[in-house]
Image (cartoon, rainbow, N blue to C red; front, side, top):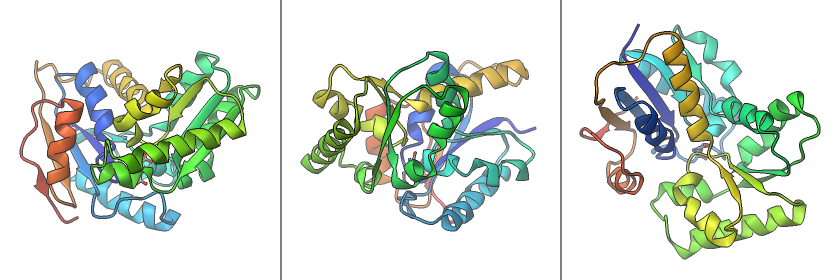
Length: 261
Ligand code: DGL
């Protein structure tokens, strides 16, 4: 059994899961892979996403992981196609939040994610299977993940895109709870709240980190050291990572390495 937690995403978005893991499990060693060369995944076909995902998980297989977090909603919609191919557990980001919505009996739920995630309707299926009375509306975005991945965290274009999506959601129905169903979106959560301060924002990255903590505690696999490390690998350049590391206040980050997988 390996020692590290592997976290992957199409780009920088999965670092929102890393942030929650560092808060909840400070002793863990984390290895991150962001496929920035191929971001965004949300506009690709199922076969393309699957092929790229297997390469990332294979990379983790060679790198001493005890568990892998799929810190990407788009990739998580396909979890059943790959989770049984490996001998370490693979945790998706969608089911912990679907369970949370049901447990808390949240009403009037809106979901915003990539078009791929919204078309797969995994949140809807998992929630409605447990409680068919919860009302859900959803909105897919073609470009918000790419805007965030290119570092346009506070740009007018990003603000306008978010404002338009919120208007679209309003025209579909009432909602009090908004699931940020793409791991890139919590990075610009402040913009969502600037337009609708009363919104209850649900961040699946946090729910995913909690699920990992529970699993590792239950199996007695927690790292007992006081302070863990964070090693970041990307298929793209390191520049965007310096920006996001500061914004999310990630700690103990080693050198950011570009690798071809
Ligand atoms: N961060 C990803 C997600 O949670 C994907 C964004 C993309 O590559 O389109 O869906």
